Amino acid sequence: MTQRLLIVDDDPGIASALARGMTLNGYETTTENRADRALSHLISDQFDAAIVDVMLGQDSGIDVVRAARARGATLPILMLSALSEVEHRAEGLEAGADDYVVKPFDFAELVARLNVQARRAQARRPQNARFARSDRSLTRGPDSVTLTEREADLLLLLLDAGPEPLPRGEIFDALWAAEGSGAENVVDVYIGYIRKKLTAGDFGFTIKTVRNRGFCLDGTMPDVTQF
Image (cartoon, rainbow, N blue to C red; front, side, top):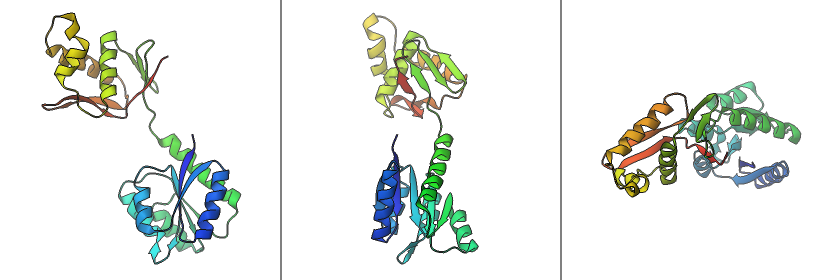
């Protein structure tokens, strides 16, 4: 998958050269020269990594990185600077940068350093659970459970609804009403069955009850596959 890279530099020539070079190395690049907009990008979760210059006109790239980390940004950030003193590198790293490269730099080394940080970030990302339709198995890492046919139908119904709570009545109508018997509390029973199975491992999500609105999945949604 193509990595989305944010390049923050107030020098148009450098930003353009970085964008061209990183594009040739497989990155999808976006450039930004303003500190306020750079911060918005860093916390937007739209990018997989960023290269940020220390000097952004009257603003500080270090301050931008520090503010982004304070607001929850987790993407790898590599800082560029013509300032080579140890205290400057330390300040950038302490602000939250993952690496610090001093200008002038070898472009191959820059790419290699960025690739290392991108791989580390990818390894840290939580793995999504996988639900296989063929055998109704739900797996994540070493954890695995098998759902009954009706439990699987209920899970898929909740997945289709996304984060929006699905009312008990709608669930009942979709899965049980055609049978001509039963009551809506059967929905609660099967929600309980799935919840119990989810406690058998760490699948990255739960079923949440939203008062007066229904049920929805909460957490990292599982990937659905045929097999």
